[in-house]
Amino acid sequence: MQIGIGLPNQVRNVTASALPRWAARAEEAGFSTLATTGRYAYPSVSDTVALAASAGATTTIGLLSAVLLAPTWPGALLAKEIAGIDGIAGGRLTLGIGVGSREDEFTVPGHELHGRGARLESDLATYREIWAGEPVGNGPNPAVPSGTRQVPILFGGYSARALGRMVRWGEGYIGGSLPPHMTAPTFEAAKRAWREAGRQGAPKLVVLAYFALGDTEAGRANIQDFYRLAPKEIADNAVLHTTPETIERSITQYTDLGIDEIIFVPATDDLDEVTRLADLAT
Image 1: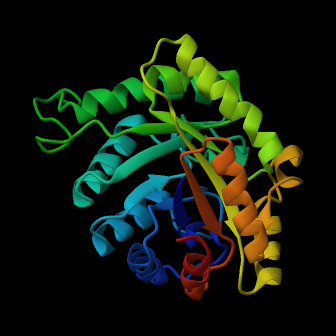
Image 2: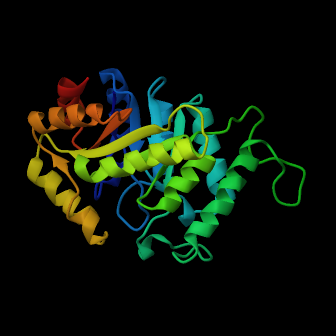
């Protein structure tokens, strides 16, 4: 199983200038992937900005949005942003998306919480068209440079609809920062949906897990703050790893479940957390 690390872009009042340094250190430490966590109505740095900064600060590590709330964006605009980041990164980006559930995240007129699932279905087709270089608007020009690739997509979420989108449009599934006994059934459902849809091979399975190895109290407070308005079943069960033993246990448990990659998401923006985690997990 591969071991990735999150960027602290979602930490309240994160020091934005630290993100490129975090990315470079994570690559040096040997992590497989750098991942962002997305929210709009929160004092943080957006996925696209954090990923673009990381693309410019690194050369080999994978990049992943885990997950970006796609229906909060106009589809064509997001497709161009993602293509640009992937181009800067030399084809290292995977787009991880979900539909979202907090009404305050949906701030763009015409992109409200209601109808977000249907909009995403339409937007997924738009992404593919734009990345294929088809003309946009009423003019002759594409939105992206020639040679733009079809960026691979992973889906997060807890509904059958999320798994349906995964098998139609995606390459795999991202599970949330919940205990293994809560995430395991959804991973099994993802594999089953993949087989039943006649997809070849197996879906890529990624799981998220929060950690705070330095200032654990600050980490715990940050997680509680981040999930203050989240659905109760998620807020009450979000897991924060604070010891080497819990880190190692999660790696073992998810390896046994056949998960391809675990992303340890930082609960603080202390740059030394990269080294602390690397000493245990890489």
